[in-house]
Image (cartoon, rainbow, N blue to C red; front, side, top):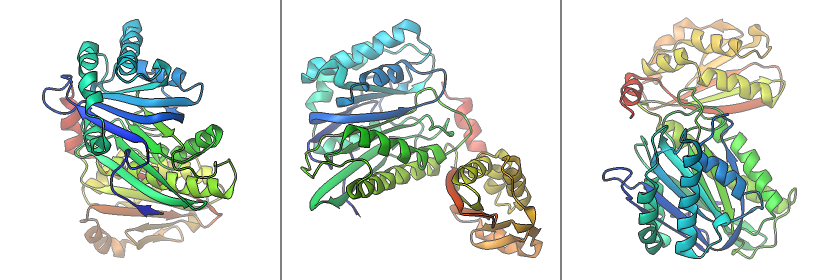
Length: 398
């Protein structure tokens, strides 16, 4: 596997574009990704009981396992808009269908932004012709920028991998900065691939890849109403069809997981007000599920996150969060390392190492490792520090 240029238009047969439709004053706010041929499609959305209208519409359009286009707006979540919200989501899909000739049920719709504001759908539908006209291979950057809200930078990646003698490409873009919590986030991620893969295998690979990527990211512990991860696979790489459980499936899944993990890390790195990127690895537990639970408990701790913001090697907060996870372990076996410095060994704190650990925290990247020495279960979570900047951003978000 190798990283290549571009993102969602790197795979064969995909085009993209991004324009300003007027939801935002000047910034790009409407993106379109289109496959030249119908594609197998799969998606994962928020587990929040309150779901935005585009999430519900897209879920319905995914039922047959096919799609050809994704349209997404930023600046307005189209959530808590009652029946009007669903009408506006359908009007958006209809505009893309009319402008491209694609069946309306093959158009997937996503939104992100402020919850509770009426969606100015006429601005979206009026902009669709220019959005379609701008479609091309070079449009992937504008598409990535058009889905951003409080993000400081675009998030995109593409890789190429050999499957059965054929080059298969996978590309992706994502947005996310705040309201980031397990079971995804205020987060949109769109993946494209030219792999020829069975729809069931595509669905399974996406579900599993999400578990180890976007479901292991947290910024602030709040679950969104609009989280959406979508993947389109149009088969134009002409590889032998990938079946679930085959060797080729494992290669594809490895590449997809890599793409999604890279995007997930960028979401954490770009957390609202963040000054530190934090990777938390938990190992030595009886099961992977226990390790995931503990890693996310530590990652979601406001006390841990504020200590990191203050460059304070407060291992008491890390140990306390590990214990609060509900996972059973032997404290006398606990090891905690901070940036490679083992500051807790056999359950005993090494306060003589605090100055060294504190000095190591001046960098941008912070690595926390917790080893319970009681099994093979391990997991990694990603987060950021919690700063005054986060409060300022969210206090004025309207």
